[in-house]
Amino acid sequence: MDHRLSLGGAALALVALPLAYQVYSGHPIAPRTVVAELPAGEEIARQPVSAPSAVPAPVPAKPTPARKQAAEAQDATPPPLSVPAQPAADAAVAAAQPAPPPPAMVMSETASAGETASAPTGAVLAARSRGTIAAAEPSGDRFEKFDESALKSVATDPVSTFSVDVDTASYAYVRASLDDGVLPPPDAVRIEEMINYFPYAYPAPATADVPFRVSLAVFPTPWNAKTELLRIGIKGYVPPAAEKKAQHLVFLVDTSGSMDEPNKLPLLRRAFALLVDSLGPKDTVAIVAYAGSAGVVLEPTRASDKAKVLSALDGLQAGGSTAGAEGIALAYRLAEQSKVEGTVNRVILATDGDFNVGISDPDELKDFIRKRRDDGITLSVLGFGRGNLDDALMQALAQNGNGNASYIDSYAEARKVLVEEAGGTLDMIAKDVKLQLEFNPAAVSEYRLIGYETRALNREDFNNDKVDAGDIGAGHTVTALYEITPKGKGGEQIDPLRYAEAKPAPATEAAPSDEFGFLKLRYKLPGSDQSRLIDTPIPRTIAAGSLDQADDDARFAAAVAAFGQKLKGSSYGDDMSWEAIRDLAMGARGKDEGGYRAEFLRLVPIASDLTSRR
Image (cartoon, rainbow, N blue to C red; front, top):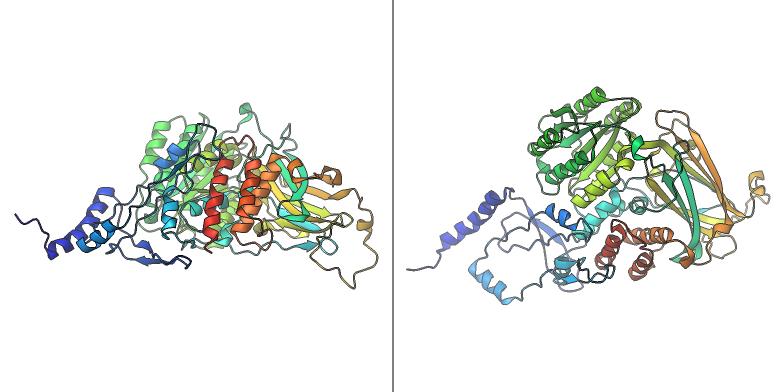
């Protein structure tokens, strides 16, 4: 019998195999991105083509983070795509090519003796060595554009004011981008969110009457020998288990067609299941879905009835366009129905970026959420997936709703945000938290705030209780870094004014020479419209003589700041090498509960490799 395949049969096979994969896997065929291989040293370009392709390009597998939840995170990773059969001629050529090396397993430098960890690049490194991964921005995701905080002269601009920020979405998005082998857009790199992603061992206040405790540190800047870093750390009150408030939650879930990807709705269901499993008998859960039409999936139900709640979550299916109809109104209606004064009453919006929840105008949507916030119902936003994310609106809605904005890229991240940090994510202990720092011109010549560009406030906003600001949850830590130029150290970059007033202002004359500056923190307790004030001088005696004398938390925060600056192409600190950043972080790893600092160390060489192609 003749086993040769006719030309017509070969053509039919080329069409049938991708269709068979679609039926088998349950995933529709979508346009693929083929990465063209170019000679070494040339820029690599991505060009979308329609599938199937005559010469399909392998899809690089996303490496799994080396954490304690690595096995669980792998469950949420999309399965590798099958490669359609090649024509005989192409197959012969392919057979002559050397097989790509398998994903590498290496001994992690940060692992204990006897432990192994997946190489941070694994199959990705092999793909890069063949020139198949491009350092390109993902298309479709939208971020608020901002200019980097500028260096300021204390003589002309001695006061810095900003709203605190405890969101962490930027770091998770940056991590997902690097793991996919692409550089994040510069506006996606918000350095304060990257710093605040990590837990720090700041001392906590003893009571909720004053819900914060401030920790200060000054130490040499690792990327500039003529400047120093001022670290301001804030720790929120941690209530004992007996004081835990009941939580009445409404999940507002995007079930549009774009959510039909493994790292979107399936991961979303698992994330919410984690949260439900952590709730107590006094807590309630309701679910509203929005897509082609909005609907109540679950009326307010006791979290103790886990089978009913989890069954409702499992029934969520993606499909249809994103036309939310009354989605947002339904969610808040259910939240109002289950609201109890003195408890947590919150809507949690989960989406891949389609915010058509019933109010199409962004300003109108923000106003709606702000009014509901004033009624005692807050809002948090969880972002999933890439390619359709409206991060700017996600941040704005969370801020107007007195809530958090988080990006969930894995099962491990869902556990961190919704279980390990549930108190900080859901239980607000203070709102409208503002920070103002006046620098002493006798001690500091220049300064710049690292990050917080989208949280900047006017000086007069600090004492205006009508101006909205950030919120802090139970047990949350907030970190801010200033790079300061001490007086007389010769590191000034701004020339003095020729026609400056010869006599300083009275307030400047009164400033003690033994202080770097004076810190003020203003906040409101939940349910109150009257702000309170905490203030403290920053004594020069706290300055460490060398970087090694700074504590682990201070040095690690500095390493993350340097990482963010270099990743976004900052005008400051960009000359610090990736190796120096990694060494600094390695030496400041400390106890590293949860393995988050070890994961950061995994990302540094990936970022180094990708930025070298920029």
